[in-house]
Structures are given as structure tokens and as C-alpha cells.
Image (cartoon, rainbow, N blue to C red):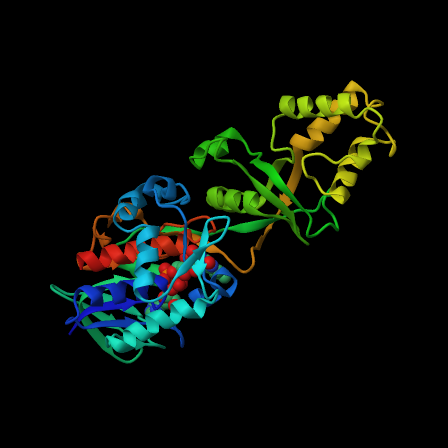
Length: 411
Ligand SMILES: Cc1cc2nc3c(=O)[nH]c(=O)nc-3n(C[C@H](O)[C@H](O)[C@H](O)COP(=O)(O)OP(=O)(O)OC[C@H]3O[C@@H](n4cnc5c(N)ncnc54)[C@H](O)[C@@H]3O)c2cc1C
């Protein structure tokens, strides 16, 4: 009988297996992976560079990057945070570097470095990795588990479930009595057809804010407020609509609500990242100092020329209007177009193939001091199988490392 079986050869599964073996070298730990190769998502993560973690060391601040799981993760991050991740990989001979936005990557800029680290460790410490070994069902016996594979049954004393976002396996867990929060996509871009952005892919505004324009009752039903539903950051035009950090954050925070409205909704964009009165103030001040200049030649708020031209055309009939010519009414119209521009969203697209799933094992059924199931003793969870997900930036892997580390301490 195995001491520990790990279901799922992804980031969470490997980190759990390796750390269990570090603490208990004499125990038999084995990984069971359904597909023909392990760590497939690590390989493609971060554009092939693997964004391992984020340069953020305060557990409370870090927890804010998780629209689902933030409360539960604080205690987990108190025990294993990004500094521990940095130290852990350093001990395995892998140095991480920080980019200007806080994302951390191996200095090799190659996700294979992380994969090799895990595979080499397993080889050296004799952690058997079974590929094409999907677990079909689990039977809980008095003191052990029986795992049904295609043609054989494997028994283990403790079981780590790190099967990622697998609908099939969530059904297995549901059959064992666990409540599964229905999965919906998170981290996506918005499909938009609008004259303001048509045929301008690649252009971006460095500081914009995007507000979700939905009824208050809907916000309340999804436990969201106006502050959470207004996200700021760079905004990028794509071939299909809008992307960039402001959009991705909104897609993650409102993932369940946006799924509910079938990705048909309205957003309001502030290209100035300011409210109406503040935008008007900036415009008045600029007008008083630049009376003779043509508005079309003086883009504000770092809006690229071609994008500013579109805003100009939507606001003024006269192409050559100068700042001194502008009426109070038109100034107001310009300000409104700059800070409260409405756009209809019609569907979603994936962001650089990157996505996570919101949903999974209900967090109320997991003891976050140990990551053990409160329903089935001896069964532990780590990674995307849980109803935990984060914004982009290395946070999803950090949650997987931290949860897996806690499991290793408790099994
Ligand atoms: C393109 C892309 C890029 C990403 N980049 C980043 C990034 O740079 N940084 C970051 O933090 N996050 C990133 N993410 C998110 C991150 O990859 C996931 O959050 C993370 O991989 C989750 O790890 P996991 O081990 O829980 O699940 P997974 O990595 O999905 O592993 C689960 C494993 O379980 C196996 N499995 C499922 N069912 C069974 C079964 N019945 N029996 C046996 N095995 C089974 C699956 O085949 C899979 O290999 C990215 C995601 C994508 C899609």
C-alpha cells in the first residue's frame, strides 16, 4: 500500500509530492497523471517562461489578488508566501528574477527549468510518476483509499487531489459528498464592435478605467460592489475588442456575473481614468493655455493619435476646431466621451491562451490549516481543483505552491 498517492501531475501535484518526500524520505509517494505527459500547463505558462510567483510578500495584500479564495488563503500565505517560493527554488538551484510589474520568472526565461527541477527531483528521490494513469473513481475504506485505474486498483493511506479543472473528476468528488461550485471561465478579453476602436488593434492607453454597467440588483446578487466593478490599468485594442490589465481584472472579479449574462453587457470606459468634473478641469486648464492649437493635434491623457482622432470625430463636426473655438456644450461632450464612454460587449475571447477556471471544491468543506477535506479524512486538495483563482501575474501558481506545501506539513 502506498503511503501517499497524488492524483494529477500538474504544478500542485508535483509540489505536494516533492515536499512530502523532503519531509518523509522513507515514505512511498507516487503521482498518477491522466495524460501522456506531466506539467503541461507549466510548460506553456507565462508564454513559455513560467510566471512562477509575484513579488508581493504581505499575505493580506497578496490575498487581494484572488477574487475567490482571498479570505481562506491568508493563513496559507502566512505559512508559505512568495519569499518561501523564491527560497525553495533557490535551494533547488533555480534563481528567480522580478520584472517591473512584479511578475517573477526563472532567470533562464524557460518553463522547462521548473519542469526539469521537479522531474529530476522525482527521479533522484524515487517518486514514481505514472502517466496515462487516469483515476476513474475513489473508494474510501476504513483506513485507506482505493483508486480505480483503467485496469487496476491502487491503495493508499493518504490521498492528495490536484486534478486541476477537470469536470470529470469534480463529478467523482461530488459522488463522494463534496459540493462543487459550478465552473465558469475567468481571465478573458471582451469582444466589442465599436467605431471608436474598429481597425485599431495594437493601440493602447496607459491609464484607463473600465466600469461594469449593470443593474445594482445584479451586483448585489453576485456580492459585488461598484468599487470592485471599476478596474483601472492599461487598456489595449485587439482584433476583436478590448484587452489589457483593466479588462482582465474585471473579467476575473465578475466572472460569475458575466457568465450569468452570457457575456452580453455594457461597460463604461474612462480614458482619462478620472471622473467627469476632474476631466473637465483638465480640459479647461489645457484650453486656457493652448487656445490657438487645434484639438485634433493635441491628444491628452496619453491617448495615441489615431485613437484621439476617432474620439475627436465622434465629438466634433469640424475637424479643425481649436481649443478657443470649443463651446461649453462641446467641452462637456468631449469630457463625457473621455471619461464615460459606453460600449456594448458581445462575447469573450481568451487572453494569450491563458485562462483559469473559477469554481471547484467548495472552500467551506476544506480545513485551510491542513488543506484536508472536512468531509473525507485523509483526502487533501491543492491547486485549481479548489474554488480558488487569481488575476494574472503568477498568483495562480503561488496558490498551488502554498497549498501543496501546507499539505506536505500535514499529511
Ligand atoms: C496558457 C496558460 C498560461 C498560464 N500561465 C500562468 C502563469 O504564468 N502563472 C500562473 O500563476 N498561472 C498561470 N496559468 C494558470 C496555471 O497554469 C494554473 O493555475 C495551474 O497550472 C494549476 O495547477 P494544478 O496543478 O492545480 O492544475 P493542472 O496544472 O491543470 O494539473 C492538473 C493535472 O491533473 C491531471 N488530471 C485530471 N484528472 C485526472 C485524473 N482523473 N487522474 C489523473 N490525473 C488527472 C490533468 O491531466 C493535469 O495534468 C496559466 C494557465 C494557462 C492555461
